[in-house]
Image 1 (cartoon, rainbow, N blue to C red):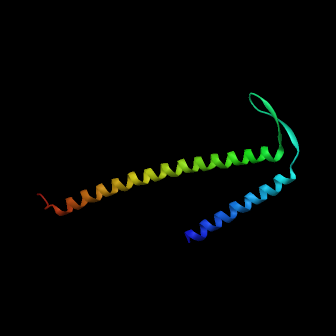
Image 2: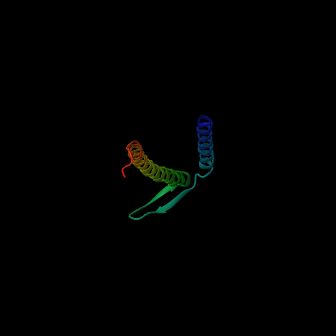
Image 3: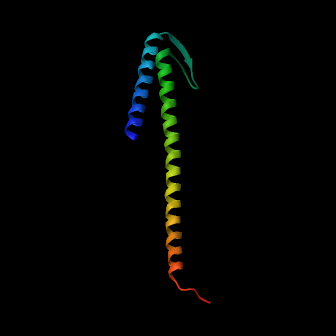
Length: 98
């Protein structure tokens, strides 16, 4: 199941890449882009590619950090449960004091 899902993900990403390439070839206009400290003349396809690429990279970075945070929390909780389980087993093994 994981192989099918990963293959499907690759196919979808390649499809998006080819659609972006097709749109990029149709948008060869040169536009004036003003950013914070300067301005420049860029092709529309280049500017769109930079914007989408940086958004994609930022999205992967944020999702990766959230994934790592959840994974560390899961490992911490597993260790806590394991410790509590061993303590519970020790308490069950001891005789009852009256």
